[in-house]
Image (cartoon, rainbow, N blue to C red; front, side):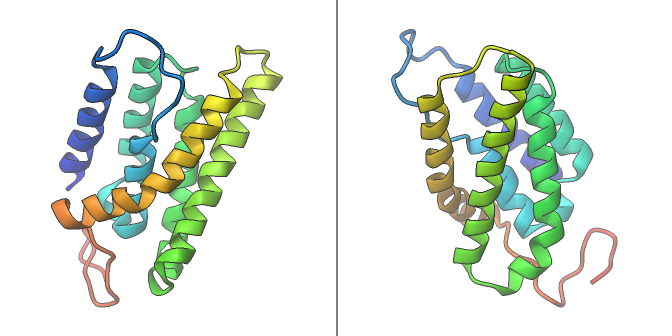
Length: 167
């Protein structure tokens, strides 16, 4: 499943980098990589180890020409904090899980923007960042549905075994 996650992220990156339209779009789509990483981290934390997340997010930073490591560090931090909350969110409903994910996405976007501001780096358009943030928040349920329906990534039950054989 770790290999499937890496293949999923690389596939999303491939389609993101395809030159389908040469003119800049006035809108930004959701960050599917972040949405799937959050969905997998909350459903099966053992499928997305920290080293895999760091490598894949750093690859994403390099290929999308963002400041190397900034978005990756924020995303890995958010995924790891969601992993720590996965057990408590497992017993609650989807609405509380979605709220936690939306809070993490908002935190990442604000921290990313603040870090770029204090380093005097060129800032992306605020409107596009907000549009991408909202689109990612709205795309999270679809990422969960695709992960569950097509890839079989479901929440671990109380009696399920993890990769090390523990409950």
